[in-house]
Image (cartoon, rainbow, N blue to C red; front, side, top):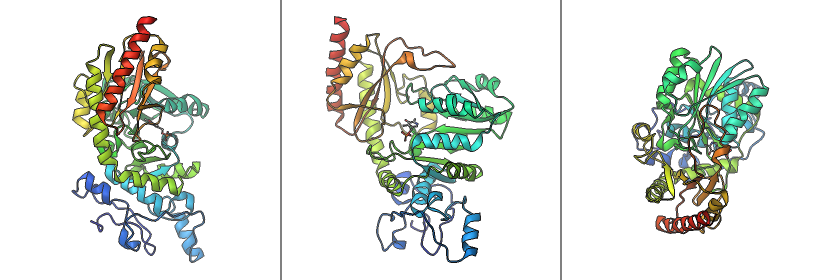
Length: 421
Ligand SMILES: *Cc1c(COP(=O)(O)O)cnc(C)c1O
């Protein structure tokens, strides 16, 4: 085992591990062993945390040579460009997902902007799903527009035939997010990717795979070239770190790395360590998030106040067939649409939940509830079809029966406030 996932030693700068992802081992085995080499580190189980800016070289020749190879995987030339600590996390995430390599940056949003900026220039065109994480959309509306890159928003559930007419000669990037992390539409990424690449094989297909995680959605095996993770969420898993990881094919790896280097947005060593530590337990945590999320979702489906549950792992969800075909699991994040009601009725429910925090950054061990103002969803390609208020939930690691009891009391408050209105 330690041979197949061998990592950096002092004497031998770590190079690409290009073996087939997994080497036939199950993900839960890999997640335990990737990104560490105890016997190269006095037997210490976890990899050391290298705090580094300056990297010293024995000769000017060695300095020159490492500089020339600075974008290659495993080369340690300057603190910001990659250390054994960052390579350990990057390789672990990339191998789990089936990518050639990873690049870690200072947040999930930095991963999105770094990935996009790696491939576009003035005059280019980008296709963005209308369901994407709002800061991704805002980046296109603001910064990319300012730099002369035009964005077209497409309907999240667009078929290949519907996407094709939107592809232009100058389209460089097809950006996907499945399911959308607010509205939970599943996208048929393999079909969209095939359609884009049939028009122009150079179009780079990206996905924000934060919901899918490197465990439940092997993006690179589904037509994606560059996959983005807000490691802030399930990889970190404890609401105490901000980090992003971009995994990619061998063809795209150095371009992504150069973009991160040009932007200067390396992640700090202690944050990388927290992410690597979180990764070890991600598989068991996710199993529980999935089970609890589904328990809550199924219970909410039976409630008269809930008009629909937005959760692709439920058979009633319009994206269920795609989820079943391409995903091996679901995380704990899903949404509901309530019967039409005034805003304060939703606040009555959410504000007084005992176990659900009100907050945005999901993926930690705690449960969350967040009202979504449906009318503020900026639907460029297709209008949002729901009439009632939306609430997004993250099922944490609490006992699911306690969570359901909390929600039940919340829905009673919602009913009282709604009827009094
Ligand atoms: C949270 C999130 C991000 C951004 O991650 P940060 O680390 O908070 O910058 C990106 N995409 C999705 C889907 C997210 O939920």
